Length: 217
Length: 216
View 1 (cartoon, rainbow over the protein chains, first blue to last red):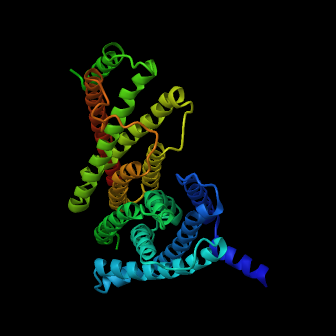
View 2: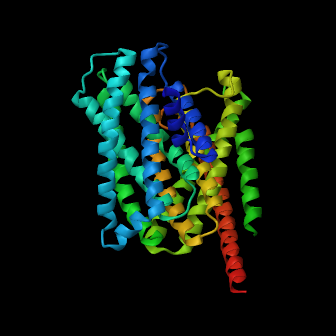
View 3: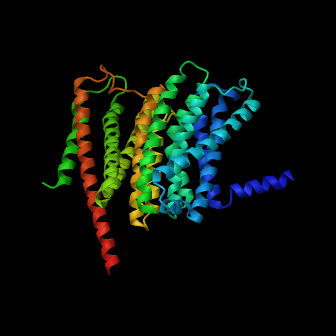
C-alpha cells in the first residue's frame, strides 16, 4: 500500500522527463545556494531554514505549475478575461488564492519541521508571520506572472521553471536570512529588504500581468 | 574616422594609461592592473542592463519593435561585460586570495546575475517562432530581471564579505589611479555604445530579412 502510494505520488510529480530534468536542475542549484548560506554554524538546526524553504519552493512550484497547466488546457484565463474580468482583478484573485494556500502549507510545514528538528516550541509569532507572508506573496506574484506565460501561450513549462527559479534566487536569499535570524535582534534588518522586495514584486507583477494579457489573449 | 578605428585607438590609449601612467600598487604588483578592466566592465554591465530595463518599459507602453531590439541588444552586450567581470575577477583573485573563486557574497550574487541573464538569453532563443509574443514576454522578463540588480547590491551590504569596495571608500584610491579608472570606464562605455549600435542594426536587418521572406 505504502509502496503503491509512493509510486503514485512520484508518477504524479514527475510525469515526464522534462519535468524531472527541471526539478533536478532546480533542486541542485537550490541546495547548492542554500548550503552556502553564508552561515558558519555546522549543526543540523542551522539547516532548518534551508530545508523549510526547499519544501516550500517545491510545494509552491507544483501548485503553480499544475494549476496553470490546467488553465492552459481549458483556456480558463482567456475565457475569464473575455467574459469581462479585468486583468488586475484576475491577478489579485489568483494572488490571494495562491497565497492563502501557500501559507496554509507553510504553517503545516513549520509545525512538521519543528517536530523533526526540535528547534523551539511551536509558536507562530507575529515576526514569523510577517516573514512568511512577505516571502510568500513575492514568490507567488512572480509565479503567477511567469506561469501566466504558459497559460496564455504554448511555452514549455520547463523553460519557465528555470527562468522563474533564477529570478527567485535573491528573494530566497533574503527569505532565508530573515528565517535564520528570526530569534535575533538583527531580524528587522533582514526583514526590511524582504518587505521592500515584496512591494516591488507585487506591484510590478500586477502592472506587467496587464501588459501580458493585452497581447496574449 | 570609422567608429571601430576610434574605439580601437581609445582602447589602446586606455591600456597605455593603465600600464604606463597608473602607479604600481605596492602589495599586489602588476596583477592590480586588472582592477581597471574589472571595475569598469562591471559598471558598464550595469549601464547595459539599465538601458535594457528602460527600453523594455518603453516597449511595453508603446509596442514599437525598435525598443525591444534595443533592450535585447543592450542585454546581449551587457552580458558580454558580465562575462568579462566573471573572468577577470578570478585572474585577479588567485594571486591575492590564493584561490580563483570563493563563495563570497559579491561573487556569488554576480554569478546569480549572470545566471538570470543567461536564462533570459536561453528563453530568447526558444521564443523565436512567434515574434509578437516573444517581444512582450522578453520585455516583461527584462523588467523583472533588472529588479534583481539593486537587490543583489543590497545583499552585498547585508552579508559582509571580503570583496574590496574602493569606490565607496573616500581614502580608497590615489588621484592617478582614480583618473585611470575614470578613463577606462569611459572607454568601456564607448566600446559598449559601439557594440550596442552594431547589434541593434544587426537585429533590425534580421527583422527586415524575415519580413521579406514572409512577403515572398
